[in-house]
Length: 340
Image 1 (tube, helix red, strand yellow):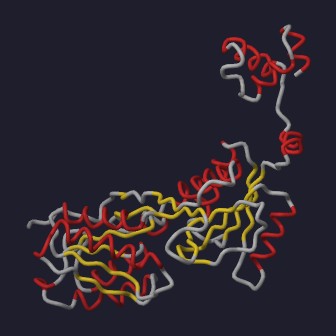
Image 2 (image 1 turned 180 degrees about the horizontal axis):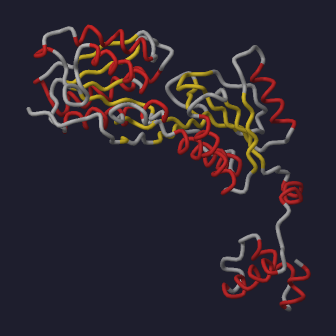
Image 3 (image 1 turned 135 degrees about the horizontal axis):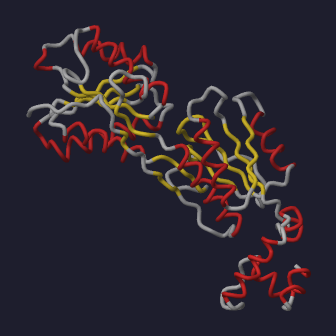
């Protein structure tokens, strides 16, 4: 900075203001741009380690995640967090954990030993979890999980499951389907079970009124085989009683439903329209016909989690909040128009 100041004939403090983007209202704008251009030409780069020592910050954050290497959402999760961390001037340290005893405590210690400024705890699926044992001076955020209780005591970033399910069901109804059904899961581990069913019920009630009764069946779990078993009895019913369209808890559930439909001689989407949830590439892209589905936006969720954590690092007094990230409908080929 002294070299830049000498070359431009100005003070070191003026250079510092411009390079740290604190020049607004204090340094003439053209001069500030000249300072930054000169610094770039001279190869000046800020030293984050030195800055961290000065500010008592490491400019590093940890992502502690329960997702394994074969998890289809892992790349989106880490990619979104990495991009947002880089944009905010932070280094991201990803620490995978398992369900083994004391695994999370060990991961937290690993993060703290690296003097991270904050931690993101990412669950393997949307669920409730306990508050981790973290020093009061270390801000943290929950990603795809919530704390116990109705009001957030931790800043939480989750997907708007109700909105996504509502849009999926609305898409089926707008295509002319009135005999619509929902294939959910009968497992209370999944908070999404109730949220996705709520979105379905809300859309049917608001858009079809009392004309139809929502048809809901539950598979034992979100697997392909469970989806196939749950849907089999539907397609054994007379054609007039069968749904013409189904919204499914997951893409894997939708895959199982499609297999059951074909076993009963039904073609997709001519005889049955299907919408899934998750937008898992290996299921939705290779589904035939290509599966219309709702995206679980892990990349945007993890980016938002980083932004929320950075806000807390900069101002620990901020109120904790629950941030819902919209789930977009991905329209492909598994939904066809149906005459009313």
